Image (cartoon, rainbow, N blue to C red):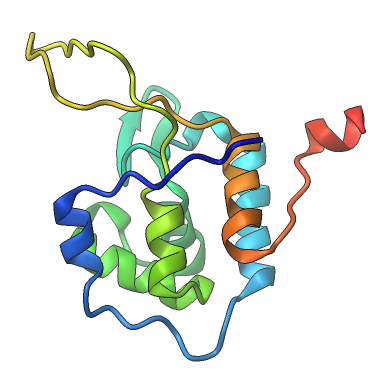
Length: 153
Protein backbone atom coordinates (compact mmCIF):
# COMPACT_ATOMS: atom_id res chain seq x y z
CA UNK A 1 0.00 0.00 0.00
CA UNK A 2 1.38 3.41 -0.94
CA UNK A 3 1.59 5.57 2.17
CA UNK A 4 1.94 8.76 0.15
CA UNK A 5 4.36 11.62 0.41
CA UNK A 6 4.21 14.00 3.29
CA UNK A 7 2.44 17.21 2.36
CA UNK A 8 4.02 19.88 4.53
CA UNK A 9 3.02 23.47 4.09
CA UNK A 10 5.73 26.09 4.34
CA UNK A 11 4.41 27.06 7.78
CA UNK A 12 4.53 23.46 8.99
CA UNK A 13 8.14 23.20 7.84
CA UNK A 14 9.00 26.38 9.72
CA UNK A 15 7.30 25.13 12.89
CA UNK A 16 9.41 22.00 12.87
CA UNK A 17 12.75 23.71 12.32
CA UNK A 18 14.73 23.77 15.50
CA UNK A 19 12.46 21.38 17.41
CA UNK A 20 14.78 18.69 18.67
CA UNK A 21 13.33 15.23 19.00
CA UNK A 22 13.49 13.41 22.30
CA UNK A 23 16.70 11.68 23.25
CA UNK A 24 15.04 8.61 24.77
CA UNK A 25 13.79 7.12 21.49
CA UNK A 26 10.35 5.93 20.49
CA UNK A 27 7.74 5.30 23.14
CA UNK A 28 6.30 2.29 21.31
CA UNK A 29 3.87 1.37 24.10
CA UNK A 30 2.33 4.86 24.10
CA UNK A 31 2.15 5.05 20.29
CA UNK A 32 0.30 1.72 20.31
CA UNK A 33 -2.01 3.01 23.07
CA UNK A 34 -2.92 6.09 21.00
CA UNK A 35 -3.49 3.98 17.88
CA UNK A 36 -5.67 1.52 19.83
CA UNK A 37 -7.76 4.38 21.22
CA UNK A 38 -8.15 5.94 17.77
CA UNK A 39 -9.13 2.56 16.31
CA UNK A 40 -11.98 2.25 18.81
CA UNK A 41 -13.08 5.89 18.37
CA UNK A 42 -12.46 6.64 14.69
CA UNK A 43 -15.41 9.03 14.61
CA UNK A 44 -13.33 11.27 16.91
CA UNK A 45 -10.15 11.12 14.78
CA UNK A 46 -9.47 13.64 12.04
CA UNK A 47 -5.90 13.62 10.74
CA UNK A 48 -6.55 16.82 8.75
CA UNK A 49 -6.80 19.09 11.82
CA UNK A 50 -5.51 19.39 15.40
CA UNK A 51 -9.03 19.54 16.77
CA UNK A 52 -12.50 20.09 15.44
CA UNK A 53 -15.91 20.02 17.10
CA UNK A 54 -18.07 17.12 15.96
CA UNK A 55 -21.63 16.19 16.94
CA UNK A 56 -20.27 13.25 18.96
CA UNK A 57 -17.45 15.22 20.67
CA UNK A 58 -14.18 16.83 19.67
CA UNK A 59 -12.10 15.12 16.98
CA UNK A 60 -8.31 15.28 17.13
CA UNK A 61 -5.45 14.17 14.90
CA UNK A 62 -2.85 11.64 16.08
CA UNK A 63 -0.75 14.37 17.75
CA UNK A 64 -3.85 15.85 19.39
CA UNK A 65 -4.91 12.46 20.77
CA UNK A 66 -1.38 11.79 22.01
CA UNK A 67 -1.49 15.00 24.05
CA UNK A 68 -5.11 14.47 25.15
CA UNK A 69 -4.44 10.90 26.34
CA UNK A 70 -0.97 11.53 27.78
CA UNK A 71 -1.54 14.74 29.74
CA UNK A 72 -4.12 16.82 31.56
CA UNK A 73 -3.57 19.71 29.13
CA UNK A 74 -6.45 21.22 27.17
CA UNK A 75 -5.49 20.50 23.57
CA UNK A 76 -7.71 23.29 22.27
CA UNK A 77 -5.81 25.89 24.31
CA UNK A 78 -2.37 24.89 22.98
CA UNK A 79 -0.76 26.58 20.04
CA UNK A 80 0.50 24.35 17.25
CA UNK A 81 4.14 24.55 18.31
CA UNK A 82 3.32 23.62 21.94
CA UNK A 83 1.12 20.74 20.78
CA UNK A 84 3.80 19.39 18.43
CA UNK A 85 6.50 19.61 21.11
CA UNK A 86 4.36 17.85 23.70
CA UNK A 87 3.26 15.13 21.25
CA UNK A 88 6.90 14.55 20.23
CA UNK A 89 7.93 14.33 23.89
CA UNK A 90 5.19 11.80 24.68
CA UNK A 91 5.70 9.60 21.61
CA UNK A 92 9.47 9.89 21.34
CA UNK A 93 9.20 10.74 17.64
CA UNK A 94 12.12 12.54 16.03
CA UNK A 95 11.52 15.77 14.13
CA UNK A 96 11.57 13.90 10.82
CA UNK A 97 9.17 11.22 12.09
CA UNK A 98 6.82 13.84 13.56
CA UNK A 99 6.74 15.76 10.28
CA UNK A 100 5.85 12.56 8.41
CA UNK A 101 3.09 11.51 10.82
CA UNK A 102 1.60 14.70 12.26
CA UNK A 103 1.11 16.25 8.83
CA UNK A 104 0.24 13.03 7.01
CA UNK A 105 -2.84 13.35 4.85
CA UNK A 106 -4.06 11.39 1.87
CA UNK A 107 -4.14 12.69 -1.68
CA UNK A 108 -5.48 16.15 -2.50
CA UNK A 109 -9.19 16.51 -3.24
CA UNK A 110 -9.80 17.94 -6.71
CA UNK A 111 -11.55 21.30 -7.05
CA UNK A 112 -12.43 21.77 -3.39
CA UNK A 113 -15.26 24.15 -2.64
CA UNK A 114 -15.73 25.22 0.94
CA UNK A 115 -18.88 26.41 2.68
CA UNK A 116 -17.66 29.99 2.40
CA UNK A 117 -17.64 29.57 -1.37
CA UNK A 118 -13.86 30.03 -1.55
CA UNK A 119 -12.46 27.89 -4.36
CA UNK A 120 -8.85 26.86 -4.80
CA UNK A 121 -7.70 26.28 -1.22
CA UNK A 122 -5.86 22.95 -1.05
CA UNK A 123 -7.82 20.27 0.73
CA UNK A 124 -6.94 16.64 1.40
CA UNK A 125 -8.88 13.45 1.86
CA UNK A 126 -8.65 12.12 5.39
CA UNK A 127 -6.54 8.95 5.41
CA UNK A 128 -8.23 5.74 6.49
CA UNK A 129 -7.10 4.23 9.77
CA UNK A 130 -5.44 1.40 7.84
CA UNK A 131 -3.53 3.93 5.70
CA UNK A 132 -2.39 5.78 8.81
CA UNK A 133 -1.22 2.54 10.46
CA UNK A 134 0.77 1.73 7.31
CA UNK A 135 2.34 5.19 7.48
CA UNK A 136 3.22 4.69 11.16
CA UNK A 137 4.92 1.42 10.27
CA UNK A 138 6.80 2.97 7.33
CA UNK A 139 8.05 5.86 9.47
CA UNK A 140 8.72 4.15 12.81
CA UNK A 141 8.86 0.41 12.14
CA UNK A 142 6.01 -0.07 14.62
CA UNK A 143 3.48 -2.51 13.17
CA UNK A 144 -0.02 -1.92 14.51
CA UNK A 145 -2.41 -4.38 12.95
CA UNK A 146 -5.91 -2.90 12.90
CA UNK A 147 -8.62 -5.27 14.10
CA UNK A 148 -10.15 -5.30 10.60
CA UNK A 149 -6.89 -6.75 9.22
CA UNK A 150 -6.63 -9.24 12.08
CA UNK A 151 -10.12 -10.54 11.24
CA UNK A 152 -9.46 -10.67 7.48
CA UNK A 153 -5.93 -12.06 7.70
